[in-house]
Amino acid sequence: MEGKNDSDMQEAEEEVAPMTKQTSGRRSGKKISVVWLRWKRRGMVEIMSGHRRWTLTNCVRIGLEKALADRTHIKPIEELTKDDYEDIRSKRHTETIDKKSQQSFEFATYAGEVFATLRNIINISEEEYLNSVTPMANRRYLEFISNSKSGQDFFLTPDKRFMIKTQTKKETYFFLEHLRTYVEHFKKYPHTLMVKFLGLHNIKLKGKKRLYFIVMQSIFYPDERIRERYDIKACQASRYVLPEKDGSQIITVLKDNNFGDKKINLGGNRSWFLQQVQADTELLEELGVLDYSLLLGITELHSDEKNSQDLASLVQRVAKSLHHGSPEKSANHTKSTGGALHEEISHSAATLPVNGVMGSLPGMVDSDEPQPDPTSGQNIPGHNRRLLLNTPNNLHIVDGEEYRYFLGIIDFFVTYSLKKKLENLWKKIRFPGQSFSTVPPNVYAERFRKYMAEHSE
Image 1 (cartoon, rainbow, N blue to C red):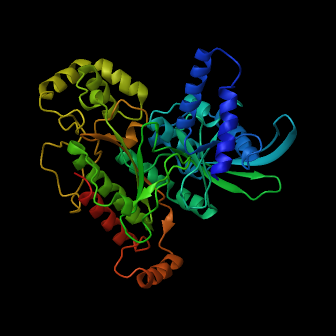
Image 2 (image 1 turned 120 degrees about the horizontal axis):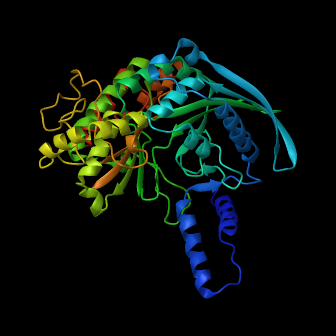
Image 3 (image 1 turned 60 degrees about the vertical axis):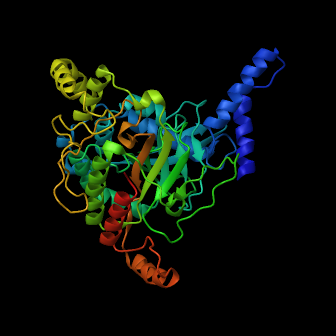
C-alpha cells in the first residue's frame, strides 16, 4: 500500500511542481511546495486515472452535481414532512469519463430535502457544499489511508472538509428508519457530538453491484496541525494498535489502550462535554445501538489561541452559538442586539473564560453554577449550547486549556442482533476479565459515559 501511495504522490507532485531546469531560487521554492504538498496529503492518495476507484468517484461526482443542481429551495426544519423523509429520487446517467469511454450509471438520493435542511442548520450553503463535493476535473477526491479494518471505502473531498464513506444496505436503511429521530435530536441539541451526516445516496454502475454511501462532515478538519488521533470505545479487548514508523504515509488512528490514563483536558468545557455525551448516548441507547466510538484529534494551542479575549470576537461567537443554523439570522441578531450583547459580555468579561462555556447568556449552560451529575440521569438543559469557536468545523472543535480537541461520535449503526449476542457469549470466553465492545446497548452507553467522565478534566 505504501508503494502505491508513493507512486500516486509522485504523480501529484509532478503535476503541482514539475522539476524543470530553472534558477536555484525557483527550484528551492518548488521543493518547498512539494514538501508542503506531501505533508498536507499525508495519509491520502489522490484518485487519478488508473486508480481502482477512478471511474466510481467520477460517477459519484457527476451524480452529486446533478442531484444538487435540482434544489431551488431549503425548508425550515419545522416544515419537513413525512414525504420528505421517505423521498427517494433516482436518475440514470450516461457520461463520458476521461474523454475516452462512456459510462452508464444510476444515481439515487435519499431524503434530499432533509439533508439540505441539515446542511443549512450548520451554516453550510448549497454553493460551498456543491463546490466541495463535486470538484472540478483538476481537483480530485482523496482516498483516506488508515489502519481501519471496517472494510468500507473512505474518500475525502479535495479540501478534506467532507468525507464520503461506503456502507451496507442494512446500515443505510437503518439510518433512514431513524432519520427523523436524528434530526429532532439535532434540533434539540444543536451542538451534539454526533457526526454530521449531510447526504445519503446509492450508485449502480453498469455491470457492478449497487454501492451505498453517506456524505459527512469530517471531524478531523482542518487536519494540518493534528498530531494524535484516537478511536475510543471505552473497552479493552483488541483496543491497541502498533503506531506506524516515522515517515509512514499511513495515518494511524490509535485506540483506547494507546490512550491509557491520559485525560481530555477541557477545563471549563468539561461540564458541557459530559452533559452532551449523556444526551447523545441516551439517544443511542434508545435506538438500541452499540459499537460506536468517540473520534478524538489533539493539537497544541498556539499562545494567541489560548488568550483570545477580543470583545468583537466574543460578540460574533455568542451570536453564532445562540443562533447556530441560520447565518442570516445570526448576522441580523448581531446587528440588532449588538449593544445588548456588548453590555452582557462586558458585564461578565472579567470572570468569564473565553474557552469555557458562556453560561450567562440565554440557552447556554453556566459552567460557574453547580451542574447536575452527568451520570445521574437528571434532566439536561434543552439546548446545552456552548460558546462556539471562530474556526472551520466549529461544532466538532473544542478548546481546552492547553490543547485543541476534535471530537465526534461515529459509527452508530450497529444493532444488538442475534449475531452480536452470540459474539458477546464468545468474547466472554475469549477475553476473560476484559471489557469488550459487543455488549447490550444500555451497558455500552453507561460504560461509555463513565469512561468519558474518568478520562476528562
